[in-house]
Amino acid sequence: MLIKQQLLSGLVLILLFLGACSNKTEESSAESKEEKKLLDSTSTEIVLDKIPSEIICLTEICVDTLHLLKIEPSAVSAAGITQESEFFGEAGVAIPLIGGTFFEPNIEDIYQKNPQLVIGLGGVHDSLRESLGDIPLYIVSPLSYKDSIEFVRVMGSITGRQDLAEAAIKNFEGKIELFKEQASMDITALVMYGSDVNFGIDTKESVVGSLLAEGVSYPWSTGGDAESHTSGGAQFSLEEVLKQNPDIIFVETFSFDKKGPTLSDQLSESPIWKELKAVRNDEVYEVRTNIWANGRGIGSLSIVLDEVTGIIENGK
Image (tube, rainbow, N blue to C red):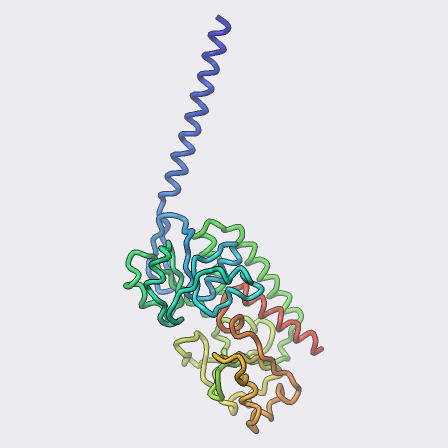
């Protein structure tokens, strides 16, 4: 009798265990089938039927953010930040490239990778949505560093890596506070970019400009007339720069020829350039265009803060 009771009790425990496992399996299955809906920067609804594991980055803020979340992109645009030492470095060489150009990526290359999500840049990749068909396209359009922070939260939610996202944001916000402490509003800074003497500048309505404005004087504004291909960018003249006469100038040279002259070299013969305080005091710095201009994510912006803070500290 005792043996029968023990067998019966054991059978009950097994059935309870199997029932619990069955419930967990059903719950897990339900979670995997639950749709996630979100709006991108164009207010287009994106529907994901599961956590995407195959993500293509057509813009560097995607590469930047996935790196923070410890996710390797399925494919990326060429000549971006992927192989920079602070990102995927040498391992980035193995990440497939999407052919075509940044402005017109090869659609067939995208299809061949069979992605579950494609991330593009606003004002550049919006028109790809129809060509991609059922492949979800999320457009991101950061207008300030705060938008870059929000994008990390979005991608953390999409990929189920909210903890990594919040940790990265906390680290970045700590760098901003340090920058505020070590910088000074008595210092006027300027970020300029271009491939020749017809240059543009990052205004305080740009991602990098809005960040620098947290710790230094950054009086440059679009006046409501920003360039369409670079949010918060504006064409400028040396005469206009001289009116504010910045203490420090950061220069992003756009060039397909690494041996070609830098933007600051091209401007060096201008009498007005020579009048600038930053030029006279040797406070003009050529920076990595990939990081400063193309990165847009908080990983790249952390590098910007480190470099700017270092320059300011060395100048004290």
